[in-house]
Image 1: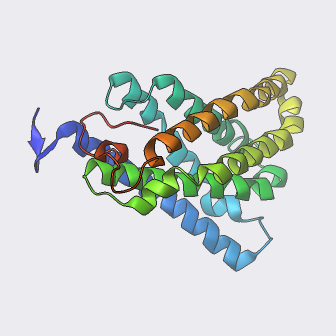
Image 2: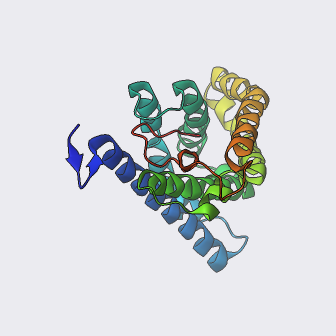
Image 3: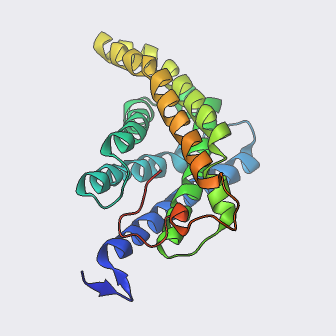
Length: 228
């Protein structure tokens, strides 16, 4: 395989992808925090500030499914699909089509965006540095700890957003409302699968002492980087 500065082409691409994704989510997070500091509880302009950036950055995560299918990373395509699909439903199935204050200017949107962006800033920076063999234990710890709070928070925001979209969806077509309800009903088993998966990974990665932690646990030098 061709090397770029001592790094394989796959690793170089994954570093670039993860770095770009981190930058995008860091932008969304910083703009959300700045907006809240400037406007407090007035959320009427929040979507105008971050909405389309959020939609496009989250859409870019479709590449993670492609990475899994091509074998560039070790995680299964099904896990990636479950994680990406629900978010795409939120950004393209609620935020984009429905220009409603109950959706675009709601506390649920704030909860969802903060949970997503914090999670992704930690995750993508952890992956990028791991490929570069740079171990940052704080990021590793946050990667396998914050989910205890951020997963339920994000899911709560997502469900509230879809709930707010139901009357608008029904006005367009009853089948669209039924589709949203069907997806909402699938949240408990999917959340359970992802949550228990992360608990298992946390025990595996953080179960030992830092001194004896294998370098593979921080996604270090393998060509195929494990996506947890």
